[in-house]
Image (cartoon, rainbow, N blue to C red; front, top):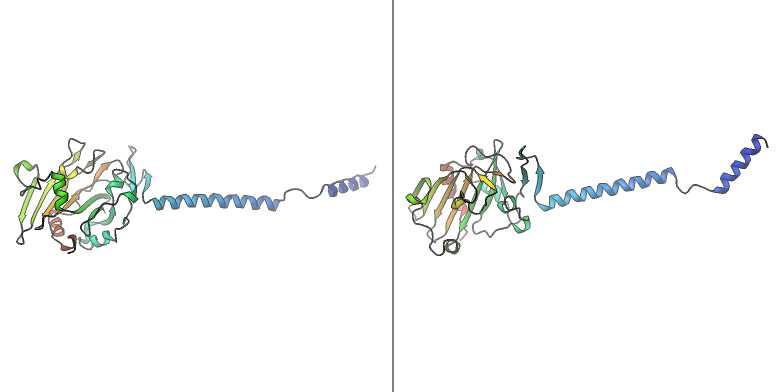
Length: 266
């Protein structure tokens, strides 16, 4: 059998075997579909993180080399109605960047959907203030007479929050002409359950809070406008280093607390 005959027989064998069960084009097409599915899964996971409203970013945005973790709290929480923008309009331009946040999410790691608190005043809430690389906080809320009675066992708040036994340092009480009473004092750094001052009690012991100014405006109807002007906290879920000073000076805090925009609409 010569070479020509061998080639002829091999050609017939190939024809009888038929086409291969796969082709190069099919292989590439299948690989493309697999890559598309993987991209879709990754994209869906990213959307889920965004929808959750809280993003954990280890080692970034305030995370420390010691292993601290930073949580980006949801900005403009559901029902916020642009509160951060409204508050920013009442503050001096140099205060910093204002974001509405939730201490329930930051400190207690509560789900953002369940972190909403009942608001009495139009700007009640917690706000992060970013400035010069640090993060401080403003907390504004209206306390009703019923709330105060429940918290004090019916005793109510003292008429004079600057009494010597109050423990409030640099405390100034101001009687206003319309019957309101504005009190502002200084709080030092706090840490641990035994060192948490009354103004810090909702926070817990997982964080160390820096110095702050605290304000109370007693209204004629028995309600109280409460404000915290904090340099921030360090520890679990911190958003950044402490501010060197509270977001607002004492005079700026006074001006803010006297703004009618903070009071419930009649």
